[in-house]
Image 1 (cartoon, rainbow, N blue to C red):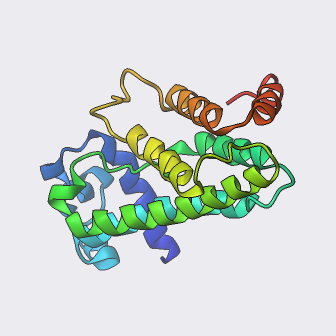
Image 2 (cartoon, rainbow, N blue to C red):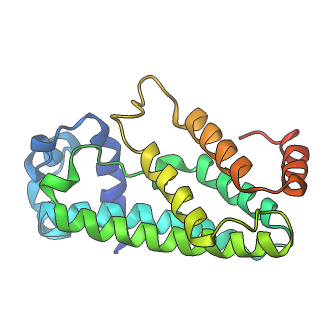
Length: 204
């Protein structure tokens, strides 16, 4: 994505929390951004392509976190803690910023994004869980596939305003609780002791 388009994507994302589905038009966005409609048309072509650009921006930010820490550390619990803390710190950049119903407005774009995100995160969590089992940190009676899907479902649920309205529940608190309950459900006694020791001085 050209740098100019990336800047536009970031500006558009800042507006979206206050938009309803029918309000998401180039005309409304251009008015709020104080730019010509033609600027958005030339940059993205259609509103659907703009949505795709936004979702790809968020996906790339998520992938950058996992690439930065690569999940190849010496301890699986440390890896998961560090990556999850980074996700928490950068929630504003990786959460789907379009809160209206993508399924009805842009079903194909939404489905492509959901599948891409699930596939990427699941593969990373699966790799971490397999390492953790080898180290005796994670329970051997759970499957890596199951654990990766649980982690992913928790992330998806966090984005659902019907379950967690962001005006009453902060994403930071929500993520803390989600991560804590998730990891306590997969660790062995050895992993639990290590985790509790690590989080004593760790602020999410």
